[in-house]
Length: 322
Image (cartoon, rainbow, N blue to C red):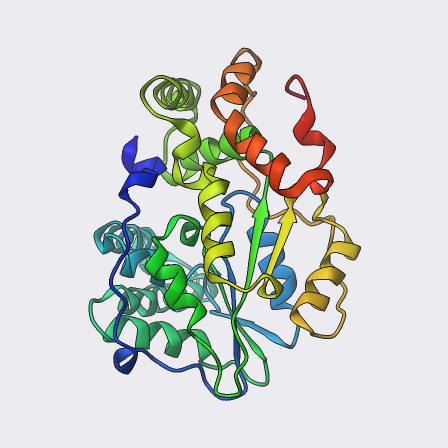
């Protein structure tokens, strides 16, 4: 379970920066946009809507580049994940119709290109910038929406802020917060799919994971649960005018997307508020566990109330699961 939920805060040590001379430069006319999570908080919805904007460019095959969490962590995990994805794409590829065969080949090439990023030294970041900016056309923003950046060490945040364009445009950052219990439950359901756990074993596995996290760990210090850490890193390293904090519960509205466009100083664009992407598998929430989860995550709730005040949606203040 440790590998599934990630590192504890005490493991987030300062990491050495790659010397500037070995880093890539932001191409002229571009600006970086990072969305650092939270996981299962609508980052894919936001990415899909921004990708339709002519001033925003994403890597064609995946919104998540994973350069910084790999460079400042353990690359073997992501390398293994991409290898697994490629094996799945290769399975029975020779029996597919021409259109499916072509789609899989393009996707395999995309995954192979991403694997170039997970190399040591100057090769990884140069591959990251090359793949991110390739075929960007007239787009202003190069967008890397990787929720795993939320628990990257301080050195990674510092390096991200130093990718300034030749014109002096600093990178922009977005962080989306979601009700902690809801986000955690959605995360567990996502892991059922990611780990290819059969449906007849899913309920048991969900119970095992939840029991482990409630009894053997400090749940609020787990990576994607710990909004304190991510907000703290952003406020330490990024000028306040370059950070936008959003809330999942109120995000799927045109007015909020207009706010994103205003923050980025790009033209207004029509969003698709009702479209949901990457919805988790449907499993009934164990209502009897809500109070224990709410208690385990109480300090995250309290931090958010103290930091954001009335901006926190009323849904966060419920007294029972609904």
